[in-house]
Each structure stands twice: as structure tokens, then as C-alpha cells.
Image (cartoon, rainbow, N blue to C red; front, side, top):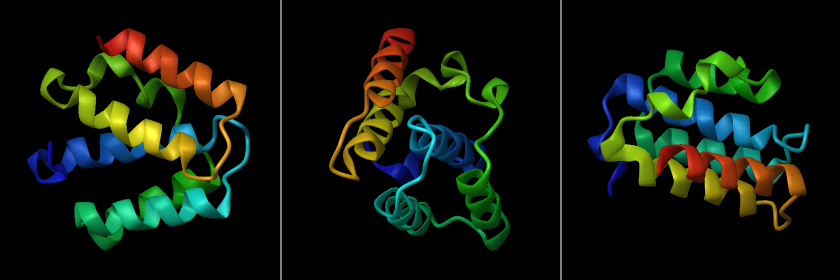
Length: 109
């Protein structure tokens, strides 16, 4: 599925999830920051949206804004794939990251 199918709110929702996965091990690695930057470009986020995403890399999005049950059914695999890519981008998978990914997959299936 292509990222182009996401509307503006869904793009930000995806980025909230991606950033929350970057924080799963309590630190955001440079590789994770670079991945987020590439995703921002692919999604064509506005300057304002990009600034919001950058804030989430400094302080994680609030848990209530990262609710797997709010992911549109049609986009669930896209969200899982993006989260999985974030988990592996730094070359190591911490137990917290693996647990969060498994939980996401379980909650959206």
C-alpha cells in the first residue's frame, strides 16, 4: 500500500505511531531520526506538520494520542510496516520495541 492513500490527519497519526516506536527504548537514535526525516519527505508533510513531528522526537506523543484502535482498518498493515521499519532501522531490536510491535499487531488484527 502506498503512503499516498493517507489523508493529512492519517499521515500525522502514522507519524505519531512511528515516533512513539522511536521512543520505545527511551532514546531516539540518529538512524531513527533519519528514518523519520525520510518518512516526512515521502509523506509530503507541511512545514507545520514537520515541526510537530520533530517535537515528537524530542518529547514522545501522549499515549492517548497513540491508540491502535483508531487506526483505519484499511491502513493497519501500513502502520504495522512503518512501526516495524522503525524498530529495525538502528540495527538492534530492544525487548521493549519487540513487545510494542507485537502488541500493535495483536490489537489491530
